[in-house]
Image (cartoon, rainbow, N blue to C red; front, top):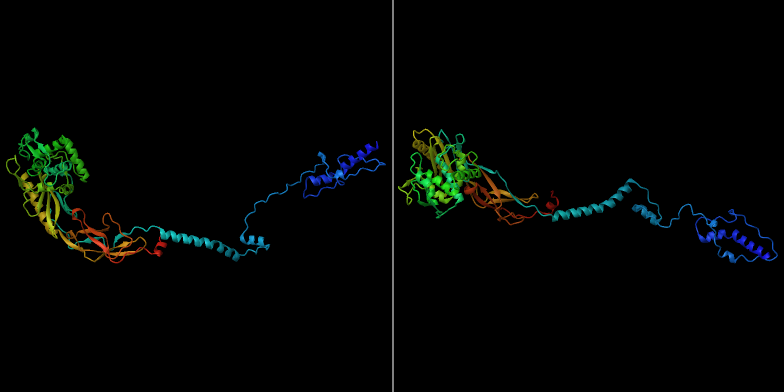
Length: 517
């Protein structure tokens, strides 16, 4: 019994004292533990009975006392901060104050401005440096040539007046230069055998020959042989079964104005006359002959109509073929197998400079002539193309045709005398400049005299540009040819080289730096 009381006393002592120690040992915390004496016990503790025997030492029990579930202290109200949280960046002055334990100076407008200058000045300087480098390394714009003076030159004198007839319509122009003049209403009208110029154009386009070439042989069919004796139209004296070269057939078409030769060539080329007429109209469209309609290859039909302006376009195109030029400039010819001698209806071919192209006459058309003539300007031949259509004042068709021929000759003579040349630019004259694209301009001068072909009152345009396949350099020495000055076009074009008057240098750094765009 004394031993039992001693055990109960030791148990009571363990329950009453070590709870505070166990709490401190098991979970250290910044919150002070409540002393066991101030915390009411969950259940009453029995007081040990007095004993005669000394109580066993409690020291060993204080080393480790297991906690009961009811003795576990409650968790702290707020979790302990165990990791460092990221802090917002501090301004430079605040950070310095934090590091030196010196409070930041008070903010003032001046201090704020100084701080902003210190922050932004390096950035601005860096941007300026990058901008300057980019501007300096950008590719330079391509230099261009530009005229420095008036792009138009006007020939001296009043205005060239040509002796146009008072009926019908017509016009004339200098090839490669421009139109001398037009007269009458440019309204579609029958053109009669002038249509054969388009027939020849299509044949030479589909079967080109030049120089000494004569082309393939063409056999005269039955229809062409029978048509050779028609009294009501102009024909070529050919017979069925005969063979003629392409060049000979073109001669029979253009010189005696054989309608049967026109129809034979149409069938030879396109199988049928209708198919060939479609080719004629297609060719007219390609040449820009907007007021022209072909309905037959010979022009016999009154429904084949055109204007003088359209015929000038055809005349310029067909006269580019040397075989055609030779044929239409032939006053008379003897073709083997054809009797007798064949004479050209264009009776002014023997006049100086007259060289074609085609006559045409019929009751609805009157007398017509599409012609060309040459004039010598500065030692070079210049071609004049003209048309006189609708002569009706003669008593017979021959009279009407002759009237159109005579009227044409008057116009030809006036044009030959009126067309001249003028010195538009002299050697060494400043005509333009090289524009480097950044404000720099270097003058250029004509390398030789430049003469233009024209007539009184004519305005001609000057064009300054680079030579085909070349470019204006960014830098070159004085005297370097960099382009050419041109007047006219086509066969009438004349030009002179242009050279630098002084050294051409690349744009400087300042120009590169300030360039925009």
